[in-house]
Amino acid sequence: MIKTACGLDCPDACGIITDPEHFPKIVADPAHPTSNGALCSLLNKYMFEEKRISQAKVNGKIVSLDEALNATSQALQANSKLLWRGSGNFGVMQEVTNLLFDKIEGTTTKGSLCDGSGDAGIIEGRGVNRILPLEQIAKAEVVVVWGKNLTVTSSHLLPYIEGKKLVVIDPIKTSIAKKADLFLQIAPRSDFYLASILARLAIMGDHEKREFLEEFASEHEDFYDFTRGFRIKAILEYIGIDLSRMGELLEYLTPKNVVFLVGNGVQKYSTGHFVLQAIDALAITLGHFGKEGSGVAFLGNSKLGFNNPFNIKGKQVQKATTNFGDFNTVLIQGGNPVASMPNSTRVIEELKKTKTIIYFGLYENETSAMADIIIPANNFFEKNDLRLSYAHHVVTPMNRVYQAEYGISEYNFTNILLQKLDFEGLKNEQHYLNLWLEQCEKREDYYLSPAHQAIPYAKGFGADEGDEFTFIDDFYDDFEDNKRLTKIRKKKKELTITEYWLITPKAKKALNTQFQRDNTITLHPNLGFNTGEKITASSQWGTHKFIVKCSESMRQDSVLIYANTLGVNHLTPPIISEEGDSACYQEVKIKLILD
Ligand SMILES: Nc1nc2c(c(=O)[nH]1)N[C@H]1C(S)=C(S)[C@@H](COP(=O)(O)OP(=O)(O)OC[C@H]3O[C@@H](n4cnc5c(=O)[nH]c(N)nc54)[C@H](O)[C@@H]3O)O[C@H]1N2
Ligand SMILES: Nc1nc2c(c(=O)[nH]1)N[C@H]1C(S)=C(S)[C@@H](COP(=O)(O)OP(=O)(O)OC[C@H]3O[C@@H](n4cnc5c(=O)[nH]c(N)nc54)[C@H](O)[C@@H]3O)O[C@H]1N2
Ligand SMILES: [Mo]
View 1 (cartoon, rainbow, N blue to C red):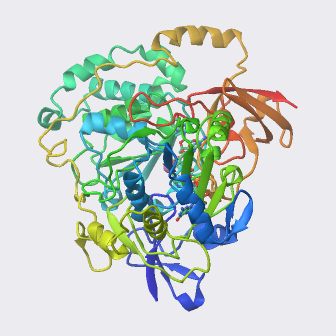
View 2 (cartoon, rainbow, N blue to C red; view 1 turned 45 degrees about the vertical axis):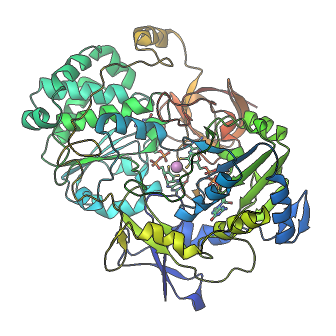
């Protein structure tokens, strides 16, 4: 039997056991903390149904892997070259290619398509983004699922929240929302206001935990003044809930132990950092930090506390808005930027300007279709690696289950290219894995990350735990100006809304653009379209056609197109968040026209 871990980019990071003789039969490792006896269908089914790229190609012609690597080596000698890495595989060895780009003095990327703005907000408040251990979630009395599509994106959290009072805050009535004791179907992009007004009402109702605040967040009086700057009535109307609902919500937040599970949904905006800082401030005000069964869990920093042997200096460009056209050679590894980056029209135009595109991946997709050189990769059952997680502290070795008949690992790719380019090759693979493992704490069946703390922030904030929490003292929003709130309210009465918020959550049968994808748009039946109709959706950034699916789970001011839907990112904006260098997929309103 071989133990390994799933490498798909999701927070669960499941442990797997398999008998190589009977592979692909795999089962969940019962010793692994995310295990609830089952693995998801992405692993058990969809991953193995997807057709792999099995042959290397240069300019459309099938060639040997070595010929393709020669062509790659040639292209990497160009003046300007970029490494754009996606998150197709979450193993640490994905980053070994940095060592190649360090030697050839190439450019890499900074920032994120994922959680960058939320992460920045957490760092502003807490100084450091620590992961809330699963055991603390299990000890909560109340769980608030806030902009997180838990059932789909983190199903292994479900056993940890069983039997608890459940609050869900989401513009869509998701399946977890249907199970909630209290569900608030708020307007998209209104979370900052919701959290700030709640904090204000909590203080007005004497729910704040003074002792805790004095010790860890002494600026709380200033924060209260700050929250008083917002007009409650106009803002509640904007959020789409009334004062009595706020009172109800507050009651759920006042027991001793409350955990907030915050997802990516709240922060796909230029102001995403404010949202996380405001949710943290609310939890701090109510005393739900630094103690058992309490805390705010967002996507944590899986590499926190590690000395990363693959960190390099060198020039970096923004990942979400990369100008590919500035480079002669672009190596795309483990990603599908043509579909997953915002503003696909722009991405395609930029990539057309690049002389050589090298695609290093597992599956054919929009990006491989544009590539000049295709290098088939090995998947995570075919190579050795190490899996970290952004939702728990377990570090799990990924052991090769079988020897692949085609493809190449990132380690071998880097090693061979270094040598072809006349540099010294890498040390052996285990050397690099050990550099990570040596930093972990060994437990019986797995390892723990050096950042693990049973109760994060129990001794304070900041990297050294001696700091206080920093509250927001200045809020600005250029997209939806606070001062415009009253105007919007008046306008709404006169006009029928013709522009809708675009909500793009993760799809169930896919891991980002890998596996099953379709072309549907989901919207409320009152919007005037019928299921099955073809419509054109457009924004100031682009246009695409989708097939309508009507659903009562939607609000009437927004539509849903899953993040991996064919063409969705033609509609999304090429902008970077105010903080955290993150894509802002939902900072856009779209128009719909029947075809
Ligand atoms: N099956 C599956 N699982 C996955 C993935 C996948 O593609 N498929 N992807 C993985 C990756 S890379 C990530 S980053 C995680 C992300 O997982 P999540 O954090 O769950 O993120 P999303 O699915 O993008 O959106 C979460 C929820 O936010 C809601 N939402 C949208 N806008 C707003 C808003 O303005 N306010 C509020 N309160 N809610 C809002 C959406 O309706 C949705 O229910 O999932 C991982 N897990
Ligand atoms: N509209 C909208 N767009 C979004 C989002 C959204 O919320 N809304 N979410 C964003 C988020 S959170 C994320 S994380 C990004 C993800 O976007 P990307 O990082 O581009 O991820 P994928 O689209 O899944 O592409 C992964 C590719 O990696 C390759 N791959 C898999 N495993 C390996 C491996 O071991 N080695 C190599 N070399 N290749 C491998 C596969 O061929 C696969 O096609 O998408 C973002 N896009
Ligand atoms: Mo992500």
